[in-house]
Length: 455
Ligand SMILES: *Cc1c(COP(=O)(O)O)cnc(C)c1O
Image 1: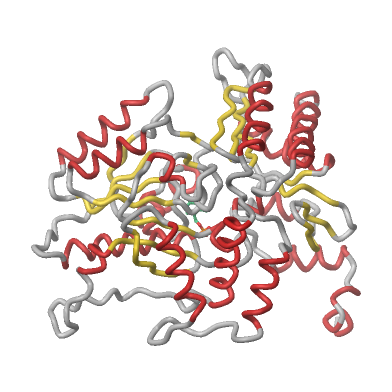
Image 2: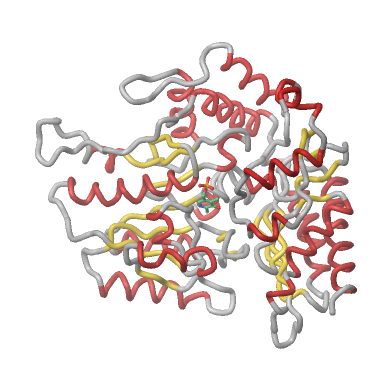
């Protein structure tokens, strides 16, 4: 035991597994299943490859849960992190400031859609959205004249904005959110738009805003793709129309780009695809290239102005919200290096061939007898498996086919994680043609094997 602690390399896999099973509670993970399984230990990485303790290499097919952008151990990001570490690892933004946070805020304001000049830092996607909700709520109480009746939020079916209770109140994934129903505040709900019924969602939003005049604090959505809902891709033009509707009704728009921001859909921010500038833009996941937990909630001077009355005013206009590691210098330094690298290496300009390659492969997969839909936006793809394609009959959920295909893909050198029976591909933006080919082929082989093995 003492030897093991002194020299971690000396611990064998069996011991590490026992320690994991004894002590680590894994998120979003069925505990009984986990305890019955042999965990895969990731030890290191190179570019888009994760490497396990035995030295086996796997393509990181979901960017380490949707956050890695430039590959692992990118020299520029590593150097930025080490450089910052030689100055200071952490200092607070409460009552003090530091250069990495200031430079990052300025950079984000330059690159974001027009008007988003103010940056509130936090440490996760959940907090980025929670901050936007609370800022919007408080804004209405402090603007001139105040509109204190505005306390409702409107969100979409299948929404996922993180796991704190405010975010869960907006959430629309029953499997994740139903348990906490009794703890939540009420939220207005509209269907998410589908290709089959593109206008129903907008009509419902319009109706709900008319039925609750002066009561809606903000409309909140994941623009372009609702990832956690199963890679639901919105029809072109939906976001622009929705933004217009929100303006007509004089309420606020919060866009959660935690998953889709930072180039994942092909533009730096997803809302730029439709020329939309929201009142709040929430960023996390890829903000640090997938290195460190850092988040940002961007907003406008108009919102900020409602918080700048003299402090003697009543009610006190201060935003009493913060997190210990808000704007952590290490995270901010890596985020700056991430943005610099994205621009300097023209990563987004170089994406279209990869996006086309993925599109051609998905087109081919669409004729597969068990593929109901293959959806894509940029380098995000979701392949929905069904037992019967013509009737869209799903597989029995207890088969856990999606999970089995992803486990099987490890044999073919890919790490994947499904959403139910939707297979998700979200590789780092720097994936090469050959690596993407290898990832797609791993998924296809795994799918073939698991379908063969079905009862
Ligand atoms: C992952 C995610 C979140 C939550 O981010 P965390 O960093 O896990 O708290 C919020 N919104 C969207 C759209 C996400 O995909």
